[in-house]
Length: 176
Length: 213
Image (cartoon, rainbow over all chains, first blue to last red; front, side, top):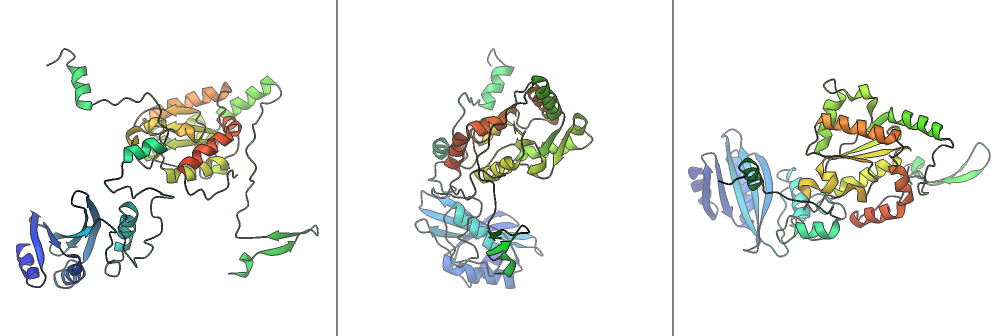
């Protein structure tokens, strides 16, 4: 992985390499270098499979992190590419022409995080939610408990037990 | 557009001309009505006995509870020996088992399926999720109380209820039907406006008739 990172760094201005396991590492990079780097990895280094495309909401830093996880089957290794986007009006270039499966991930991110991927097929159509009117539900400023209380009737009398304390009280009622 | 899909005027065999729009769905849009019991008590009891002995379940799995249906159908637990069987379409079924959590999107399909079932019909809520939301109590996407949206005749508790619990629940449902207490469909007809208001409060893109069967 370090060798790959050195070779890529000679071509692209890349951030630090985080090695999670011998066969799994992450690289942070600027959004303008993503597409050339994906092509380079796919055509020269055997990373032919897009495992997943997902997002993390770093609300404190005011940005979204997109993670493109690529797999090199022959080399049995995974490489994650992290791209940071500003949270306001988040938008990213679509990669559905490189991997058609990316279109599905991008639809999901559009709906659940509100990250736009212009020109991605079907990106503006509803994917999982129907008739959603609030802010996208996977954003961390979306309060799911408050939403549930406002929109759904709760049945009174619901009690929640902390499993650890409940079992301790039952097994050792006299105390430790 | 294909010619057979276009709106046109057709002349019927009795000579009456009427307009046909093949792309429009045709529904009976009148609201459901309360089904009165038979004129003599003993006849109604006979009917109830017959209803209790022919419970046909709609094969519609809404949540993880649907996984409990397979062992019930198959020889391990064999619900068929109680006169219970599964049917592929709402028209042929009279018991709707809401098997677990119900997302708002699935609720829409569940309502349509329930309304397409023919009377007499029953609803059983299975698992904690249908009772008070269960582990999805704070979820943005699942309903918390099934009886706000569909008339529930019986709840089976558990997360998940085992097939034995379901069999016990079906026996209890049979007892209710024989006693003439499983009147969910009539309750739905009586409080139709209330149920519709609740349903429309969570289903924001209401794009179906108010009642269809």
